[in-house]
Length: 481
RNA sequence: GGCGGCAUGGCCAAGUGGUAAGGCAAGGGUCUGCAAAAUCCUCACCCUCAGUUCGAGUCUGAGUGCCGCCUCCA
Figure (cartoon, rainbow, N blue to C red):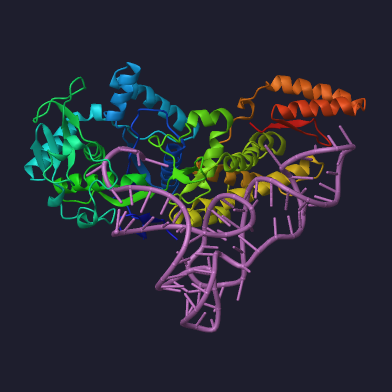
């Protein structure tokens, strides 16, 4: 089976074939940097990073562009509150975003364009739309004439006659009078008193929300991309408007595949499920979560659900995934043992049958839960065999053990699951302090002072350290943090 | 009001016609001075009703419940 990807545009899984053989142009909508990233962002970008990784694993060269919307009302509001400039606020939270994504082992985009660095491309595109008759100026604003674009609604399956403008009660009163039609949306907004503004043919102002993606995508990837991705809330109106803007000018499809990830939801105090979002105020920031949980636990949690399905987040589920992750990590961390004890090469042959099963899952619209079953099987084999040896048994086939490990390593990397180096774990106790306690306990055990030995075990357990005794080698420990 | 999605064991979650993957948790056994995420074993009338079919978690219809979008949103 070759790769099939669900296309929001056609509502079907379709055989994936990029425009140019072996090359994928991938555009992903980024964040508006006015606050720290929350779990919902984490879910979204873990998904797209995994898609990108799998495309590359499948032999494609991927150009991945992701924007920052660094000019926006919410950033301005934040700037007002903090006394910083809009640019300072944006830079702060862009840096924060990069930190969080790095923790989740999300690879940086090929480029991260920003509104502030793409202004000429944006105003040029608006000019083209005006010339083509799809945009009209009004009181210093410029609006897109939605009814002129015949295909409007093709992505979200909405038809104008079915929409009720303002149903969500969020119409901007100031704009209503300036629009020829309630469905029209702003391409350019006239400068307000005290706000940053850029010069334009329509007077000073700043871009509307949707235009930057059309402009940046075109600048970096051309008229048509292979994949355009984002959260499912962006499907309408954002992506719909991007299509209207871009296709009105180019006459070509903006994207062949539109991909949307499902939300990460939370249960509120009344037990109702709702999406995590900044505007609802129910978000947990990634950086707070990572104080107590491994970023890889969240990554595994995300991968354990098909990317289009919603996830109802809870700490219990995160803990379950953290438990599972630690066992995978333990298996991944066997590299030293394989190299020094088994004397097997860390690079080399892998298990083709397991890789085929992994691909079978991933080729079916990135079915990561299916692919993970292979990861868990490999883990089970490795830990079982390893444990046999640590309990005095012998390893039947060291070469096969190494092949299995290499396969696990390879497939984990495709999913972006990355083990910490053993010594780099963050703990309340240093490795040296733990080793000292283990030594004390060893002495206690040798003198059959079980009370003292158990006290040390308990003490370390309270610090999140679990001791494991072995028949023929010193006691080892693992951290549950 | 319109459009779309979801409903599988204690929790999470795959499975789109052939007799229920996987993870976490739990219980029991092994091992252990004790212990352990090690090891062995156990654990599903797939929301309801009615159809189609030799056969349905999977298809059709009706119903019930939940969620999302309808110009802030990943």
